[in-house]
Length: 302
Image (tube, rainbow, N blue to C red; front, side):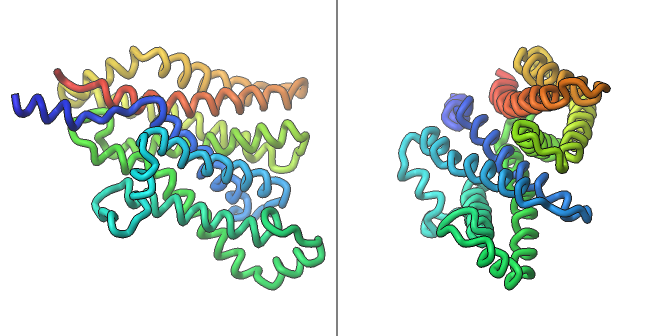
């Protein structure tokens, strides 16, 4: 009876809000990571692309506190996450609060240096500022990239520490959350297509194709690993593959259809195909977050 009561009390009530929270993290971090990738690969980063990525990342990040407050119900509980007096070094949520604060601060500072927010500078003054602090900007850019990678690993870090959830166990879970790269590439590909900017668009659609392929491989490997597990793992596998959101939202609309649209040949309606594929991929990433939460909280032995 005591064990039963403990199970009920400790059961996390996670659902659509937590899924949306993880989805916003994917959009924010994935967009910045993908926008910065060309620079690390030796290709120039155009200001237009990076400016769009920065705004998309910042907007998604600004919605995160609202979602967390709605989930926690009391604003003061959200503020406690950032209070050093209540900091718990063993809590992924506590470290997550610091990580998101650092990521947001670096992003805002970089956008301010570029003249994209704050007091508007003249083009000449902006170029002088950028030239004077080029090494500092490179350091901030590198910091943004690694902070973005850390944000993609925040959700699995928060899930793995929850005991008794077979679907959240295993070394493969963190890899799944790198679908943030797919979300970021989809956001940029859609924006570039909408504004009819051809620069780098093929780069981002190729990243989408690679990310979709890796996601399918992950699903196959994770299914095999659950098959070879115990009773809880088999139960999680059955609930996973019988979930309509997973089959329809993630696999069909989020992976298969975008892949077909992106690899299809021909020059007719290219922009339309890219926009549709990008929107569906973004929907698929949200479905993936929702399925991970839904299956993780329901696939437990009675």
